[in-house]
Length: 366
Image 1 (cartoon, rainbow, N blue to C red):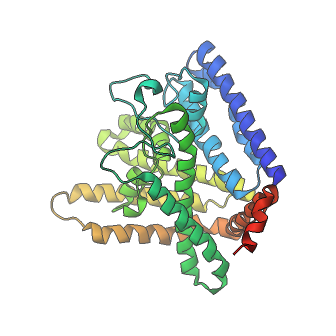
Image 2: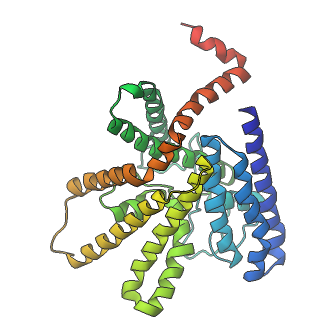
Image 3: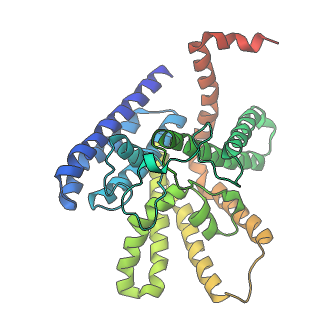
């Protein structure tokens, strides 16, 4: 555990150095375009290789997601003065936060420069979230999700007595809750340090009423926000010249889901260190095709027929669970990533106890 933490610190020190180079040299001295893209290739190399020194699920997984996927895609946009890093924020720490964290700053649609944190700061609760009158306290929601995740982890002790479908349901809930908490934890420093109001990172995906609703409006919106300008919009513009604007959306949707599948294959490689089986890519290709069909069917029956959300909601979640069991989870399960992730919780508890000796006496107190 100590070696893993040292490697984790080295990865993020390297990341800070790379992004400092982007902020002080690339953004100021190198014009947008191919030359800037070439100047960023060493940064791409470090982003791709340094997470390979990590082996734990809970450190390697998020780091790969933040750097290899979101970080590289944001810098690709930055090469051409596009995306959240353009225009470059004046503050280095602001630049680093946007580049490598899954956050997006809320902006006035008419504003072309990032808001000044000194003038946009709002009242905050203890965890750094904006306090909005009339809305439930988000810290309570986060606490409830953390409690549910803890209960799921505790339930794994009885896995041998549970039906495989129950275990699958627990894995789905675990993945959702863990991602939600990782996104919240990663966004909290940006809120606390800069006072920016951030766009939501997800929107209660369990309330989805369709696949289009799930993937486009609710699940992991940070990925949606980065895939739209890097894949969807360029593909749609190119295809519009060939098939027209009416049909250009369909290949753009398919290309977006295909790229998402390929990036999941990359993350799976970092977690398993085995050759890809392409199952997770087919999972996203399948869902892309289903979204395309869903969109066209909705257009064809607009105003005449529509499933009630009470029906379409459960159908959506069942379809996600069934196809996830078929294509999304198998590679992780075959390589023991689930058992490894569960086992790391006990390792982390033992590590904390070993480094905070007074906690080792806590279980013996009554």
